[in-house]
Amino acid sequence: MTNSTTIINGQVLTHVDEEPPGTVATRAVDDKPPSIAVTREADDDKPPSSLALADRTRLFAHVPEASWRDWRWQFRNRITTVDELTKFIPLTAQEQAQLKLVTTKYPLSVTPYYLSLIDAADPDDPVRKQAIPSFQEITMHDMGMEDPLEEKRDSVVPGLVHRYPDRVLMVLTDICPMLCRHCTRKREWHNGGWVRGEAEIEAMLDYIRQHKEVRDVIISGGDPLTLATRRLEEILSRIRRISHVEIIRIGSRYPVVLPMRLDDELCQMLSKYTPIWLNTHFNSYREITAESAAACDRLVRSGVPVNNQSVLLRGVNDTVEAQLKLCHALLRTKVRPYYLFQCDEVQGTEHLRTPVETGLKIIEGMRGHTSGLAIPTFVIDLPQGLGKIPLQPNYVLKKTGEGIIVRNYQHRIYHYRNPKTETATSRRRNGNGNGNDNGNKVPFPELAPLLKSEQAQ
Ligand code: SF4
Image (cartoon, rainbow, N blue to C red):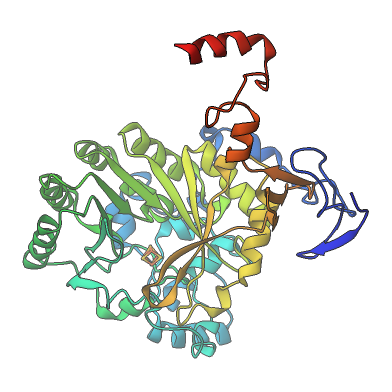
């Protein structure tokens, strides 16, 4: 064994090359204890039942409780102009002028509920960054693409995207209760709020009926829960009548931006068409309130598992600490952290994007420091419709003839051995090959007589 020093992927290692597999774990010279000190606040340990309700008294004290809890009231009373917004969020005259310009290109829409989560005094509030326009949406507009995922190209009939072999995406509407500033489908915001008509729905269903390889139908938008419950049920029941469709997934941000929509009527309806999975989109632990936790709870109790697909956003959730708080809060709410998306290269979102390395460092800072269930898969959805690529920090340092050299989250090194395959030589040596054996090389000598008698028969 040599005593060499090797640098692999920036790690200074000793004894890497000569270490026999499965014996001694070599160590990084700068082996450190876990470097991410996660400060846990008292709030982190509270069960969902103790989550605070959205504080409507600050901004919406004049609204009767019954109206506030009514999702239709919330939807009708969305804040959609800068003039309305200034009643709730302090904006200078210059900011107002800038935002009016931005909203001619990228409109504004925030539910009163979601607005009540914003700390109006904090311009860097992570909830605010997702809902309130930024002047950079137009000053950096030359960066990115209008439709980076080229969804239009993969549309087989209007509204139906068939990119992967066994699943399709049904886009039922472009209406969302909130217009998220990082949205991949910002290009649709100017098309004026449409819902697919009956002929278009039937064309989509017809395509699915004819393509028996489709076992998974994803219903998305816009936000499909914008449809009336009765209309949604009608579509779900028709999908369920297609025997080769095994599961239905619904993509919706209602649990985050308007959780009152997940009422008993909707959840009971969904429970009739399971297996249905609902993928939602929490980006900050601040979005997990008593109302949103209760909405997820109603879904889960109705037999609809809830997964979370967050987007990595600058100033919102781009630290290990922010992600740990989010994912721990999700698990307490019975929501599984599923994907952490690199923010797509969409025009008007450049100011919210982070380098890919940020995502890798976050995953690195989570792995080993919390349970695997709390760690989402970090993915890039590649432009040109090339699909999702999972990205991981590099734990494999080197491949050897016998296995691989890996490191763990503490940068401890181990030479992991692959299983041996029996060679002709070893078979002869062990006395069980080509008849030239005497049984003496059996590893357990006391078994040799038994082997001989077996071979004699
Ligand atoms: S809910 Fe989804 S589709 Fe709607 S604006 Fe937000 S990110 Fe875009």
